[in-house]
Picture 1 (spheres, rainbow, N blue to C red):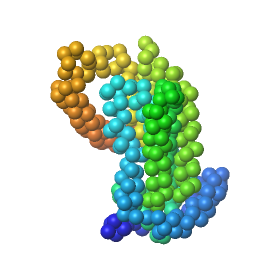
Picture 2 (cartoon, rainbow, N blue to C red):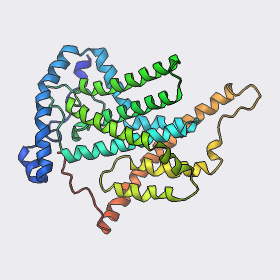
Picture 3 (cartoon, rainbow, N blue to C red):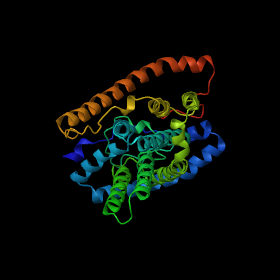
Picture 4 (cartoon, rainbow, N blue to C red):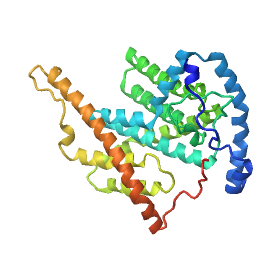
Length: 332
C-alpha cells in the first residue's frame, strides 16, 4: 500500500537540463567542478534503485519518511527554543547556529554546483515535501544538520558527563542513532546520492569544528556589556545577498539573547518555591502553556516576517543595487 502512495511529483528535476545549458551559464572552473561530480551521481542511480528494491519494506518506508523531519529547519525551529526556555540557552544558541549555517552553506553549495538528485525513475522517492525536486542535490542539508548537531551533542556529553557514567554512553549512542537514521534515510528514500551525503558530512564536520572551537567567544557576544551584538542584523542582511536561508534566526538569536541576558524577562519560569508544588499541576500547566504559546508565536512570527521580507527586500535590493546571487541559475 505504502509503495503506491509516494510517486515522483515533478517530471523535470533541478539540475537535469541539457549539460550545454550549464556549460554556457556557469563560470569555466565552476562548470568543471560540476562535470567532475556529475558522473558519481549518475553512476549511483542504478545502484540506489537496486538497493531500494532489495531492502524496502512498508515499515522502513514510514520510519525513514518520518525521521527525515528530524533534519529539517522546521523541526529545529520548534524544539531549539524549548532548550532556551527551560534552562539551557548555551546549547540552544549553539545548535541554532549550527543549523542556521548548515542550511545557509548547504543551500549556497546546492545552487552553486547545480547537481541533480538521483533520477526518479529508476529510484523511487519517498518525501513529504511536494517541491523537493525543485532543489538541487549536492550537498545533503539533512546530513549537514543532523551530523553537525550529533557531533556537537557528543562533544557536550563527553565534556559534561563522567566517563564512568552509563548515561554518557547511552547519550552518545542516541546521538549517533539520530544522525544515522536521518542520513541513511536520505539514501533509502531516494532523495540523495552517497555523493550528496558525503558532501553534507564534510560540511557538517567543518561547521561543528568552528562552533565547538569558538563556542566561548560566541557566548561572550551575548554576555558582554557592549552593543556590538547588534551588528548581527546588518551582517545577516548582507549574507542574504549570498543565499536566503535561516539568516533571520541568527538576527534574532544573538540580539535577543543579549537583551534577555540584561533583563529579568528570561528568568521567568519554574523556580523552586519550597511549597512542594514545583513539580505539581501548576508547574506542568506552566510548562505546557510555555510550549504551546511559544511555538505558536514562532510560527506566526515566521509567517509574518516572510511576507514582510518578500514585500520590502526586493525594492531595497533594486534601489541600492545590492548583490543578489548572480551566480544562480534557475532550478527548472
